[in-house]
Structures are given as C-alpha cells and as structure tokens.
Image (tube, rainbow over all chains, first blue to last red; front, side, top):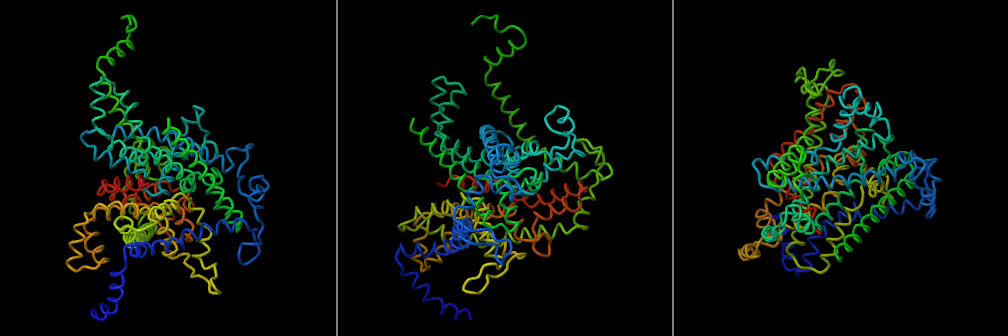
Length: 317
Length: 303
C-alpha cells in the first residue's frame, strides 16, 4: 500500500523538484492565496457589490436591483435613519450615532491606552526580580476571551452588586445604573478597551526599546543628561516607528469594537459601527448593511492615511 | 535659587528629590509597577469574590468575600453544559491551528527562503486583509457558508451550526499573522543545513517538513499559540455562525452570553463560568509567556 502511494506521488514530487526557483515560490504560496481569494478577497469585492444594490425584504435572496450609490446617499444624508436601529451620523444625538460613538471610543482609548502602555513598557523593560511573573500577569487582560472581558465589567458595574456604582453615582460621575445610560456605558466601554489593550501596545513598545543601542544612553550619562532628557531625546525618537505601527493596530482594532459591547451594555445602549452593521444585517437589509460596512472600512482607511502622513511629516522634520 | 524656596514639608520633599533623584526614580518605578499589576488583576479578583459569594448574600457583598462557596464551580459544570462549549472552542481552535500552520508553512517557506518576483506585493496583500474589519467580510461569507449562494445552479453547502462555519472565517483571519511569524522564523535557518539535507537526497518539500520546520520549532509553536489564543478569544464570527446551542457547535461566547440572557440574576454563576472559561488561556499564558510576547511583536512589527 505504502509503496503504491509512493509510486503514485513520486512523479508529482519529481515535477516539483524540477521547477525553477520562481515557479516553486508561486507553487508554495498558491494554496494560501487560493484560500484567501475565496474567503477574503471575494467577500470584500462582493460586499462592495452588495452595497450598490437595493434591499429586498420579501425575496428569497435579500439583494434587490442595482441602485448605484443610493444606499450611501441615504446613509450619509440621514434619510436611512428611519430604517436603522441607530443613526449612522447625527450630531443632535452624539451618544446614539454609530460613527460618533465609535470615533469617540477609539480616540479616547488610543490616547490614554498608548500613554499608559508606554509607561508599562518602560517599567517592564527594567531588570527586576520577578519580571517574568509581572509580564505574565500583565498580558492576561489581552489574551482572555472577548466575551469574558465584557462580562467582567458587566458584573463590575451591576448596581445591585458593585460597591462602586453608588459612590460613583454620589460623586455625580455615573448615574445609578450606568449600564443602561449611553453616556456612562460609552465610558465603561472605553475603560474595558484601555484595560485590555495596554499589554498589547506595551509589548510592541518594549520590542522597540529593546532594539535601541545601549551606547546612546552611556554617552548621554557621561554628558550628564537626566533620565527625563534621555527619555525625551533618545527613547522617544528611537521608538517612534514602532509606536506608530502599534497605534495603527490599536486604532483599527478599536474601530471594529463589538464583542465587549454585546457582552456588557448591549448594542442598543452603545451603538458602535459594527453593532449597526450586525443589526442591519439581522433585519435582512444586506445591501444597507454592506454599505455601512464599506463606509467603516473607508473611515479606517482615512485614519490610517492621516497617521502615515503625520509620521512622514514628523520623520522629515 | 535661594534656600527659602525649600521651606516647609513640600519644600523639603522637593529638596530631597533633587538631591536623591535615583531614589525618586526607584519609588516611581515600584509605585508604577504595583499600580499596573493591581489594575490588571482587580477585575479577575472581583470575579473570584463574586463567584464564591453564596447567591443569597450577593446583594450585600463587599470587596472581600465573607463566605466561600467553592461548590459554585461544580454546579456550573454539572447543571450547565459549560464544558461542552469550552470543548467546542478548543476543538475549533485546534483545527484552525492545524490548517493555518500547514498552509502557512508552505507560504512562510516561500516568503522566507525562496526568491521570486512579486514577493513584496504579495506580502502587502496579506497585510491589507488585516486592515479590514470583520464586518467587511461578514455578509458574503455568511451567504457562502450557509448555502445561500448558488454557483452554476448548485447551492454552496450549509455550514451554519457546524464547526466548519467557524473554521473557515477563523482561517482567513489567522493566516496573515501565521505567515508573518513563520516567514520571520524560517528565514533565520542557515542555508547550509537545508543544502546538507538536499545533498542527502531529501526532496524540496521533504526539506521543509523534515529540516526547516523542526529547526524552527519555537517559531511554529509561537504561531500555533498566537492562532489558538486568537480563535479562543474571538467573538464576532463565533456569535454569528451558530444559533447558540452547544449541540450545534456553539463556542464559549454563547456559554457565557446564555447565562446573561437566560439566567439574569445568577451573577455568581456568571462569574464562575467566566473564571472557568479563562483557565485554558491562563495555563497557556503561564506556560508560554515568552512565545506569546515574541509572536505578538514579530507579527505586529512585520512591515
């Protein structure tokens, strides 16, 4: 049996053996790109195609006639708000419009999370007893299931259980049931996002710090530079590229925030962009949902462009 | 600067700080470290307190437990099929890891060790996928994997409520990072070792599986762990691709959410279930901390 199999496949192996370097390379990457072609590139194109069609709520297949950019016009002008569970963009109701809520969560979370992550990276980069354990502990929040991240904070802000809700309410920071208030819940979502992303950005920054030439610090030390000056003039410029990549990944991930919302306050309280797409999809409005999904991708693309331009400018000066 | 500026308690502290700056840095370091660890661990601690508090005492609990009801962990497993959800999660994550490592090794070898035109653009294409949010793939993937799409009159197989309905999207999401990690590790094996094997009569593919992969075992393990954690913690497709019952391959996401929706007051059970759900990940993190750190940075920094 074994011999038979070997006989059958050996011509194939012989063929592979005789391929030149280029063809061998293409042969090896072919399976991956075949899989990704079906599971990634085709869906991306089809999402865009869907977004140019009409919703069909009565047909067998939820996609109707070609309508061009009509869906986009309806969503951006606010005409689609009547059929959406929450508006895409409405300045009158900032905490219930998907784009504003998502941008707010992302902006605040990235700003605070990156600064704290930088702090954590500097601390965990020092040699000290038990550093291994400290590192193990701090990567836990990132690695646990998203549904549990949400559940933890859902339990932490349950008014009937939590010892914090009442004091926070007395201070006027939160209402007496923060998980049903859009404004309070948005703050809670930001807290969860910061809590779980600090380790991620800290690890990336640590890799950057580790690659800095130690001689630079020795020279600075001899020249009498204080620790703060060393940080500002050596560490910060040296880790800038790494920091920039880390912030891009952080931003992308916060822009698609969904699971922790579903597991804590719920999509009707904190309607993020992904929430809005899922809810619209569940109403069988595939075309409208695709248009919102595509708009989300565009918004993320624009933000990345802003980062790249800023980085280039900072690099040039 | 006159001495007068340093009078009073604050003044003395400032003066001390200026003259003993290393002590101040050391103090700042320890305060920072302890705060980070406390902030990190507090939600876990809170889950533990909540889990062990008997349910009739839930409403007057503080932040230190009065009673220890350890039995709650048994109840969660005996009365609810929590272990079934966790089993589904682990199985689906394992299948995804095997698929990704196999496909990713071929591509990682090509990107790391073979010279062919168009390598850069192809790697960039992989990176592009990780820029898109899950929702950009959702609807066509759902159509394709639930049998709603016909190709030449034959509908695609309906994979809703099967493990494959999740394995396919997870493979798509995990392949880019697998390839980035494996490319980095495979490219570091010296050419001489591979050549030696080839002289001995090993085929090219044989050299990949018998020489390169074993020599990059740490890299393969790193990629496998990163993919496993990524799938185990995933929410979006896990939530969409099943109806939520464990017989239909629902994963941990539903194991936790069903408590919230069906047993609304059983907060101690929710906490116990969450803690049990964390165990597989906690074990991995403790055993393979170095791998995770390396994988995250290798994947994140590959540009």
